[in-house]
Picture 1 (cartoon, rainbow, N blue to C red):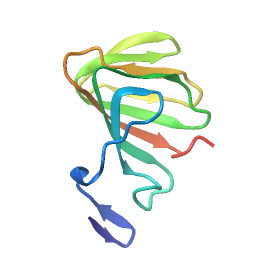
Picture 2 (picture 1 turned 60 degrees about the vertical axis):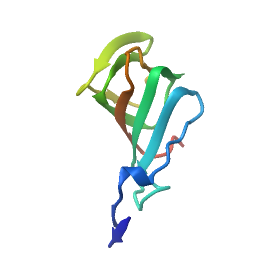
Picture 3 (picture 1 turned 45 degrees about the horizontal axis):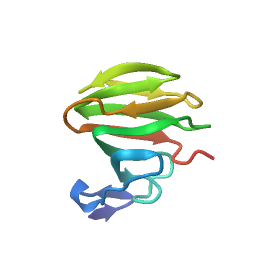
Length: 121
């Protein structure tokens, strides 16, 4: 890892996969955020959901999110409506919108998640 004047360079292989509550066959790497770098305003992750993997429907009080699908396909549920998402689709989720994502494809669904602010307080 490289750090200088608040800047950080790190290889993704240095970060362990984590499984968060309400995530099933779904794993994420926290790449940039208050826990991993001197970033206070955002949380940046990569997630990989195995076939049949999903996160249960939920909403955030104050957090805004962007998902960017890198590989695979699945269903994004927004307020009970499901839409197919696949490579290069991006999803913007304002605070308060109920959402979930499901891997309905035949390979891993891989996507970036950018969240601001990093906590939902």
